[in-house]
Image 1 (cartoon, helix red, strand yellow):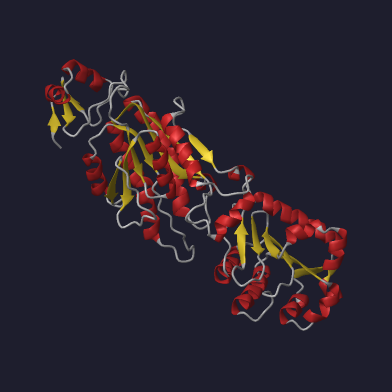
Image 2 (tube, helix red, strand yellow):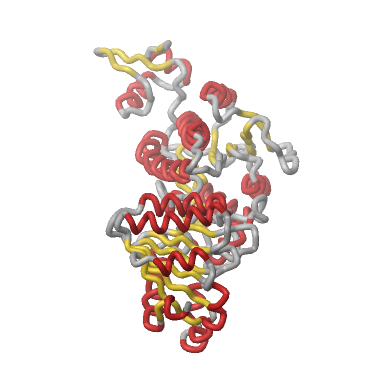
Length: 460
């Protein structure tokens, strides 16, 4: 690395040598090295801003905001807000990415980047010569994972974009900012909740939250900037037709998905207002986190659902208790190989010392339909699985509210997991939840059903 002397740096930055020495003593020139009485200053070091000055309000130059991920729905809405307020925008987008519609405006400069390449990002930053008022990182890399066939390359790619690129861009662009500048990192509530199908994405968002707090500690003192995070919830737009997004509205107090323009407005306020807010995260999720009502997988097809069933039954240890409701759906107790394997896993589990208690819920008048079912016969012949029955018609009369909890049945495992059946409509088989509230309600329902049970062998 090449270095400058104090005298050379003073000439290059057009400030006094005395001022250079003061900045060095304040540790405001990153990378500078002191050797005895002399200083070596990296030749590529950016001139520290004067904390006593802000952007010249009388200049005709428009303030510049850099947006990483400009081609996202939120990015395009943020552009509209910034342009209407008189800002100039430098927009970064991943090479080969698709634009749903063209962003074309005289005050927008677009730069194609490769978020997976450190050198490409460094080169892009070096090309930006303007002083920067704001930087917004909203680029997102999301990959839905298969826990049974995990892709480690995709996991690393997620961190390269969501964390490594964000870290590099903040650390390099902050050198071009001054005491009035602001940085906003767009993250996700997945950082607080975790994820069943996107562990890389969720953990990367959590890392970004910590980076925001760390950057506030370092760069606010060094450069005077503010940095905060927007934690976005379920936002409609491109993925609004996704069934999991539509179902998420049930767990949102506002009973709707968020709009990209709402998140863009939050970003704009963080950039231009909230002058004493620093190192903080604004949750914009319609109240989703406060509900604690998701904490579950997406709806799983039969293949994935049975894989997870098999995993839980195989790994559940001696002494654990399974409490199960069966409603005799059409897709239960058939000759499907996965269903046969699942039945066998029940008996393998009890052989290991797992306690299983199952309550069947159906109309007593239809008991004749199940007399010759081989799986029912096997349950009745076992003295290790407690098998009981509740009449559906009696339940409707005496405690119909329990049906709202039972729905299509489920498998409870101790107090930590619930494997929930879904209607046999041919698309989804079930989902898994670790949500404590949902598990507690199911267990209370199971205990309430015990008060009206009969032994299944007395019915069949």
